[in-house]
Structures are given as structure tokens and as C-alpha cells.
Image (cartoon, rainbow, N blue to C red):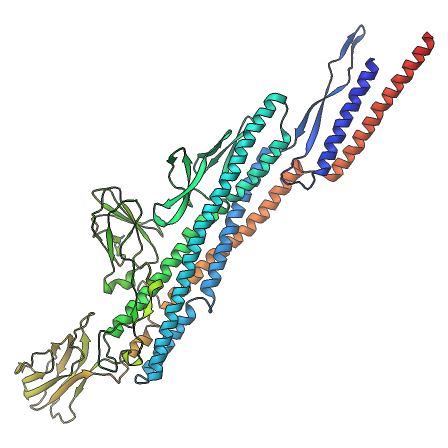
Length: 634
């Protein structure tokens, strides 16, 4: 019977090989499948007087072929690939919005200043003034549109973060369940649970697309670490991931791990660096937030500077102190620490050119305040009134404690120009309200002396309400003159010492008298409602390089933003393409080890078929020998 048994073991072994090979062939296109290889071992031989005789073959195990190093490389590369792909998609979409003339700001800005030029060329033209108002409305509408889109993207990122966290929880829960099932199965069967392990590997790949994880193989059970070493899965237990408000920006959500009732600190883009989640967080921090601040700053500075010039001018009715634009900003720092302490933000009127594209985080330890600029991490510590000077540079705004007073541990997000773009509007509707002219000076044509008047300047804003009143200087003698006009007090006998120059100031203006006026000479200051002295300043704003940070024009600042976003989008696309190529290479290397090779499997089919036939032949031979033996005995 020993010959029969040996043959039967051969049949069983060949059958196992055929089944394993057929399974490999059938799963050639199954994602996550690792090819199987049957491991054979010899049965315990039988002792005889001439030594040990072979007892056939046995199947020791069906081995799952894999390389832990290559599998790990696939996870890491795939995580980065998804990160750059997601980042690139969002950045290219934003680049298209900002750079397109039909959706960006460059067109409306140029149209607005073109309209200002027309008013400078024809200051009394109602059509030109109406065009300026219309162009201002178009510019404000485009600011609304751009900032609304940016806000929508911010909300969408929060939604995507929430959805991604839910997906991570679902997958990590399934992996933890598989850890338990694999452990139980292998303990009972003493064989590897290959199919369950393949399922877990596929889930690991799916998880790596969402977030970067570190895999620790603990005797067949996978522990997964996330971020800087926080445990996402320990054996059969999965930690729940949730979302919390960003401690530096309460308008944004960040992922965080939750253990029982304890929520661990939030994980930002410095901790979550891979997968879809890492791409979302990096895009929001590196592209979206700077773009929001830059657009708000441009709206704030343009409106403030235009209003400053417009306030000094006179409209067709002789009115001054009229704002062309209206806007409001959220001048209270956003509380980021769940406390009630208030900090108020103020931008002095002369400081708008000092403002930067960055947001800031202010913290208070009970004794000192620390203001940190988010764009580069530079900071200043001290009294609340002093920390807005960072590295010796004034940041353009001031801070003051409000009510309720700040307490130790409080934090605030400071965005000085927050909401400027969203609330920007044109404050006037009538063409006559456009202030194109200014207070002008003139000398009476009948004057006989050599006196002159000029170099007019104004104090403000705000401007004196009597600034638009006509004022007359009449010389009663070469060294004295009388002043006549509303708001001046009409002084008489004001002393003038020839040949000057001598500064005369009333109603918020100052002029310079010089030369030698004669008795009876008259000089007049009156609103120049028909001149273009103010309108020309509007037009000059377009090419001025002292508007933004004191070095850029509005067009230059906007081009800087567009180029910044385009550069990051391009870099992300290049990184994505590079990671895609690398991922394909790593997958090819892994598949060369773990994947199913049809040529190899076809050769194995022939090998096991021949082994099966040979084993069957040996059984047939044993049967013939047994029949011969029976015939002899008969």
C-alpha cells in the first residue's frame, strides 16, 4: 500500500499546484491580489532494514508572494501622488479664475482707471463722470465675485476635509476588523490568511490615497500611525478621526484624532503631508488663504487711496469730503481660543501702503502679547501696542485690547482688511457727485504789484467742512491784507513781510504768498469745480508704484498674485507628473515580484499537469503490480 500512498500524495500535491496556478490566472486583474505559490515538503520517511524509504510529498503552505519594502514604497509614493494631484487640481482652477480676463480683476481695474483718465480729460463731462461710476460698480462687482468664489472654495475645502475624514474612519475600521479576523483565522488554522491579507492590503492602498500613514507589522497585525506618530489603528482597535476648528483660523476645519472623550490636538498641513487630505490642507494654507488676503488688501488699499484723493476734491456742487467708495472691514480679531477676550484692529489712514498679504496670529500669555506673521513665521513679543512692528517694520495696523479684556491663553486671528472685497461698493450714484476739481488760487488781473500765490496744500482727511468756501485776500497796504470768507473769521490787517514767502492757512488749506503785492491787489481761493486737478490724480494712481507695500502699482500687485498662484499650480503639476511616473515604476517593481505573470503560470500549469499524470501513472503501475501479485497467489 506504500506505493499507492506515495502516488496519492503526488496527486494531491499536483492538484494543489494546479488549483493555486488556476487561482493566480483567474485573479490576474484583481486589484490588491498577490500571487500564490505552493510550498511542498517531504513526508516523514518510513524506516526499513535498508534505510529510510520516501513516503511522498505534502503541501506545507500556500505562500503569498510579496515584498514588504516594495509594498511600503507603493503606499508612500501613492500618498504623495494623490497629495500633489489634489493640490494641482485646486490650484489650477484658482489660477484660471484669477488669470482670466472674464473672471479676474485685471480687466475691471484697467477699465476703472481708463474711465478715470476720461474724467481727467473732460472733468465737466457728465458722460465721463457716469462712466467712472459705472466702471467703479463693475470693479466692485468683480471684487465681490472673486471673493465670493474664494469663500466658496474655502467652504468646499472644509466639506472635503469632513468627507475625507469620514472615509478614513470607514477604511480604518475595516482594517481593524480584518486585523482581528486574520489573527483569529491564523491562530486556528496555523496557516496564513492570504485572501484576508490581500483584502487588507487593498484597503491600505485606498487609505494611503486619503492620508499618509506609517505601517508597522506586528506579527501579522498591522498597526497604523498617522501624523507625527499618533496611532490610527492598534491591532483590532481603530481610533476615530474627527474635525475641529483650526486654532489659528476658526473659519477652517482641521483633522484630529479622538480617543474616547478626549480629542487630541489638531493636525495641520505640517503633520498631514500626504494623500487627498494633505493636498487639501496644503492648498488652503499655501494658495487659498494668501489669495483671500491679497484680494482684500487690494480692495482696501484702492478704495482708501481713491477716497483720500476724492475727499480733497470738489464735486460739481462744490461739496468736499465725499467718499467715492464705501466698504467695511471686520476690525475685531477673530477669537481662536473659545474665550471671550476682544482685541480691536485699526488701520491708520496713512498706513495702507504698509499692509501685507499675510494674516497674523496674536497670542497672550497673561503678561505679553506675541504677534506671528503667518506667511513667514516672523514674530514680535511685548505690549499689545508694540507688537505690530516686526523686525523693525511697521505692519500697517494697530491693536488694542477691547471688552471683555483678554485673558492668559487667548489667541486671535488678525486679518486687518477682512471683508473689504466683499463689502466694497460705490458710494455715489449721481455724476455731479464725482469730485474732479480742487481748491484753486488766482490773482486778480488788475493787480499792480509783483505778488503771487500758490503751493496750495490741504490738511486731512477728514477735510475742513469750509474747505470749499471761496476766500479773498485783499491788500490794504503793501504789508497788510484783509481776509474775507466763511469760516475764516474775516481778520483784518494781517501782516505780510515782503518778499516772503509766507504761509497763510485757513479752512484746512495752506498757500504761500511771495513777492511784493501793492495796495488794492486781490488774491482769491475758490473751488475749482471745472478743473481736473483731482481727476488727474485718480488717473495717476494706475501707474503709481507706491500703492501696495510702497513698491507696487495695483496692476503689479495683482500680477504678483496671479503669478504666485500660477507658479504653485505649475510646481504641483510637475510634482504630480513626477510622482505619477515614480508610482508607475514602483508598482511595476512590486508587480514583478507579487503580480501574476501569465507566461510563468502557463509553464506551471504544464509542470503540475505532468506531475499529476506521472503520479497517476505510478498509481496505475502499483495497481498492475498488485494484480500480478494476486494472480500469483491464485
